[in-house]
Amino acid sequence: MGDEQMVTVREGSQAFVLEVTGEIDVDTVDALEEGMARAWEVNAPVTVVDLSHVRFADSSLLNLLLEARARYGSAGRRLAVAGPFHDAVRRLFDLTGTAGHLPLTEDVATAVRGAAADTDGR
Image (tube, rainbow, N blue to C red):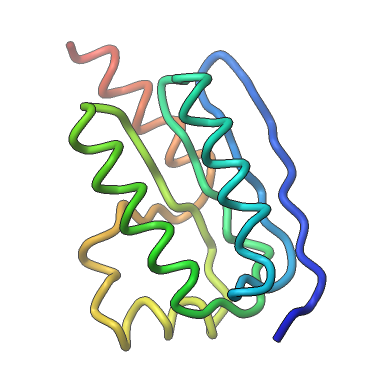
């Protein structure tokens, strides 16, 4: 598709949020990959990939998220993928069967609250 895509980073004490806008495909996934690399270095309590403003995504997004889930999981770190999801993005997760394998949350606030609750419960 190649439509313009933008990744905005918000760093806070509770979360590192990557807000993605536009479309994610093979031509635009690099910006999100760079943001994920930065998030990994910061080591915030939770890294949240906010897809609520993404209108289209392909397997490039799935590959990135599945690799990130494995990496974060093996390191004992928290990752969340936040919506609400556009119909096209939700359909991608559902049709590929990845919805059950990704840490999907309804929105960024829910992801941050969940990470805070996990931290408080330890």
